[in-house]
Image: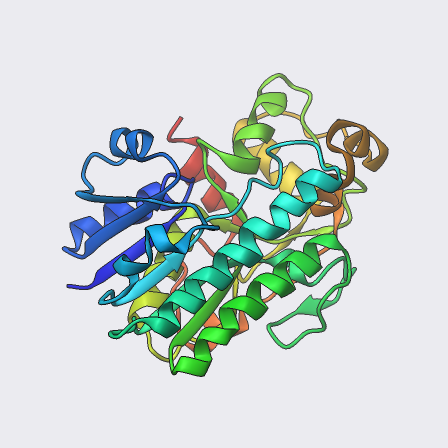
Length: 306
């Protein structure tokens, strides 16, 4: 049994992760901005601490004596339309939050053995048909800079001999949240189709596999540094839309052009239309077993739950 601290526990991944860890008898401490809400959404968790990433004095004592810190918190990329103010929030919530966690770990008398921190595949930026591994060149746009600074802060924990895992997460497929939920409705209304040109590579991961990757990151001491957390079989957006249509028995012919996406979501459209052909090389070398390697079985599993 491990004592595990989790930030971002009420998010799409966090809730199921907490449930899995409680079921395997780990002791969970949830850092949350809203304790009352978290208690309602996570009734099986016993210990909650109010989380403000700018005020480590409120939660630093909990870090001392923990075995693992899982840091998933960060401002929602699509919580608002991007402007300079919200871009600053996106960056600071990740950079300063991670910095304060790392500084607290360094000061702890009994330090955790590992820090598992979120990151994203947008650290690479648009790369056309190039296959991207953990050793590929990093991007230079806003999201790439956010991820780089995020990982740079997490990496500093290694100065204290702590194992660090930065999970460069692909698009997580979940029937109840995120990108898949937003795409289901237009397909069900017979107006679904690819986003952008359709030729861009779309690197996805089934929610179950994402959860298993985090569990593996806790238990596998050989997994460290940046880790691409996505399926070994990315698809183009055209292929994704065609497969979605096949699973739903709907057409997939109504393209949403890039200019329309930019009108709808602004600068954040770059995260939708960028071509990112990701290979999870470290997971493959560590013999990680994906439950859903291919898109069609993944979508059938998720959509048939509805």
